[in-house]
Length: 427
Ligand SMILES: [Mg+2]
Image (cartoon, rainbow, N blue to C red; front, side, top):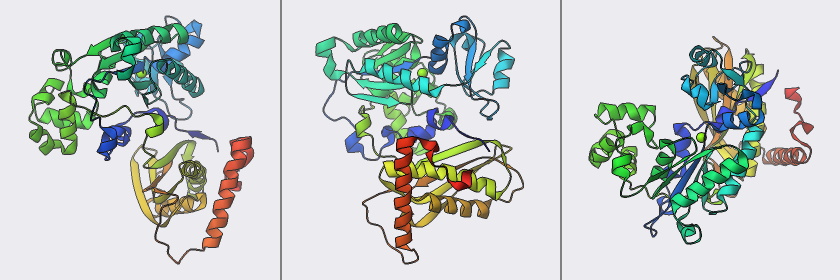
C-alpha cells in the first residue's frame, strides 16, 4: 500500500489554525502590547505563491492559465493555487479540479513541489530580516514584521514595504503584496487590498475611509460561519461591524464578537510574535489519505501505526506527552467522524497511541462503508517534566524500555533517513 501525507494539513489556513494562533492565546499578558503606542507593522504576502514559483521554473507556461493541484491519483484533486490568468477565468483555490476545468478548459494542471516553496519562503524571509528580527510567519507565504524600531535606520513603513517588494521581485522573481499599518489585523487587511506587487497603507487617519466599506469577511477572524451570523445581525461590512455596539456582538458571538469589534475599530494590540516565542503546540496530529480505500481493521491499524510514529516523533521533539488520543475517520462519501479517549496516563509511545486509536476506531466504526482517510491526534499535552498521577495498572519497566527503543529509532532515522527502519507492520 502506498501512503501520501496530506499536504493540506500543513499548508491550509483553516479557521481552526487561527484559533490556535497567538491572537487567541489565553495568556493575554504575553501577546498584547502595552507600551508602544505608534507601532508600524508590515504584512507581506507572497502572491499566488505556489503557482508563481512553478511558473519561474517552467518558462513554457508563460501566458497560460496554470493551477497547482493536489494529484487526482491521491484524491487530493483540488486547486491549491492558481496564477493570475487562471484567476481571470474564475478558477478558485480549494475548487475541485473538474470544476476548475469547467471554468477554464485550457487550464494547465501541475503537481505541487513543497521543497521548492519552502526554499522560496525561507529566501523571502531573509529579505525581511534585513529590516527587523521581529518576524511572525503565518503559513508558508505570509509574515508580519514589526518595523517600529527600524524607522530611524530605514525610513517610514511604506518606504520599507516598497523596498522589500522591489527586492523580492528582483532577487526571487516572485512578487509580494504588503500592508502597512499600526496593528497586525489592518496590516493583513492591507496586503489583501491591492495585489499583486503592491503596497497599501492603512493609517489611523484613513482606515475608516479605506477599510470600513469592505465586506466583513475580509477581516481576519471572519470565516464562513461567522459571516453568516453577522449577516443575521444585519452586518455586512467592516464598518457595520465597527459601529455595532460591542455588547450586541458579544451577546451573539461570545468572546469572538468582542475580538472582532476590536479588530474593526483598529484596537487590535496583539504583538508580532517571533518563532522562538511561539507557545508550544497544543495538539499534534497527522492524517493520511490512502491511494486505495481502507477496507478492514488491519488496513486501518497499519495507517494508524505510520501516523502515530510521526506524531510521537513530534511529541519527543516538543518534549511533550499525550493525555488524550483523538481520531478522525473520513469515509468514501467524505463524511467525517471524530472521537477521542483519555489515556490512563500520558504517553508518547507509538504502540500505545496506535492501540488506543484502534480501540476508539473499532468502538465507533461498523464498516458499512470503506474508509478514505484517517487521522490521529495527541491532545491535552503535558510537558515531559510535569507530574502526573501514576496508576498501578501499567508495567513501568516495560514502558520505559519501549520509550528508550522509540527514542533510538528517532536517532537512527535522524542519522540515516526515514526509510532506515521500517516497522514490520508497514512492510
Ligand atoms: Mg499568498
